[in-house]
Length: 183
Image (cartoon, rainbow, N blue to C red):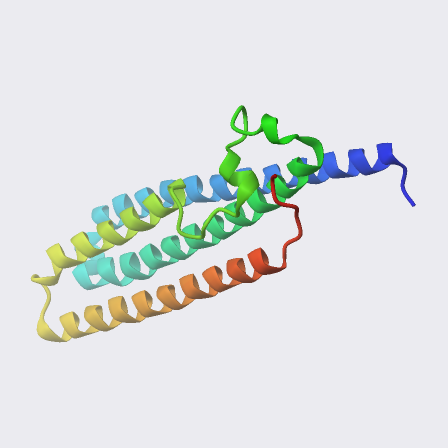
């Protein structure tokens, strides 16, 4: 049986690891944004070589992959915030909340759809993809339009399924995660 001091050191190390995971998910999103911007710039410069169909053929799947990465980062964020709040309840009193740590993090788990930046990334990736696709769509021949609509629809469908899987994983985590409630 570990001593009280060993337990405290272990819990503090867990706290650090959970925060590191949040930082890693934030880094992944910013790296994805930089890559996405570079992709659009690179595709724009090569449009004469690859054509509009090539441009959209790369942009659409990459946009939805960016959305999936943002959904995954969001899952890690909300999961780790839940774990961090459980650990903080071991050290903090009720009056410690709302000073450095929002009380809502200690009272309940953050919802999967939340106000964190990952949802802004998701909306922006989707909007950019949709606007560029709509703008270029009229320049395509009918067969290319069918391909692009099929590609867009398939990517959207797969991304929605992935989002539902991420949400259900989080709901399962919330149901099974330990932790006391604030009084």
